[in-house]
Length: 91
Image (cartoon, rainbow, N blue to C red; front, side, top):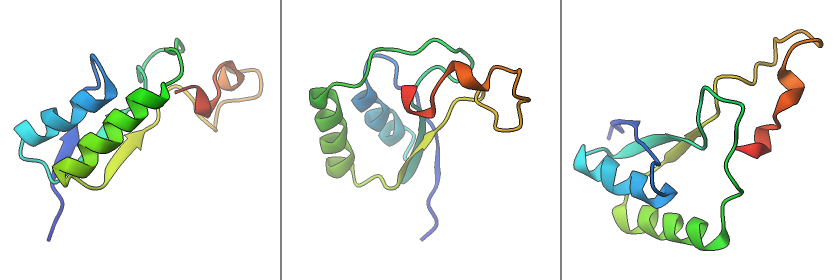
């Protein structure tokens, strides 16, 4: 079986991405873990939010759910560039 999916928004909460994928009849989906075009990050994910997300994924049958890193961290950025401004784990 071929997986069909799309990027879905995490606006409101991470777990809300799953019903959005279901509305689009996705068998897989991709999410940005933070704003893909900004260096600003949100507070770390709480254990409760992570648990709610995992439960929503498990109940939906959507798999895999893939995290897309932001566009800004660029390993090809010269040392004087902005690579050091954010850690990959910030998002």
